[in-house]
Length: 145
Image (cartoon, rainbow, N blue to C red; front, side, top):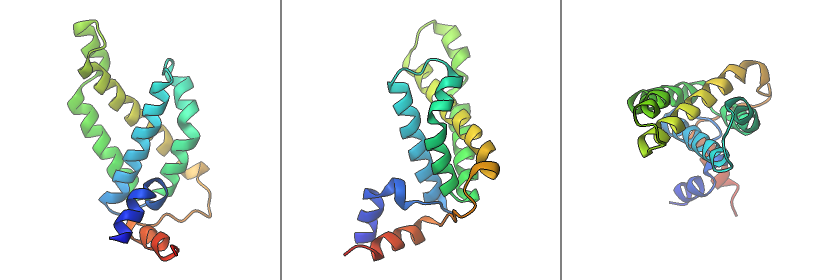
């Protein structure tokens, strides 16, 4: 019970990488939060927005295991494909409808993760050793008083 609580309270730090679905969920949660934050401040140009969120997203991506990264990308690709191309959807209605906004958000998340993944090999600190969620949560819980 305490481990579950610690993981939920410290989710952004607790998942520190994973070789399981929980690690992918943690990375997706961080990605969603980071992209939503940028969108709430008025995402205008993609290049500027991607540059702005790059450091925070790279840190989350570096902390995830390769397996968690791959699973997160696969999930986002599927979600984005199901939502459709936001440009095509907008062209049909000429308004920022809920389906257009959802497709645009998923497209931004997918593209953000792809950009971050392209930086991993060259920019992740060599001393960082991602751990699966369960190990990271146990480490946090064992350090609690």
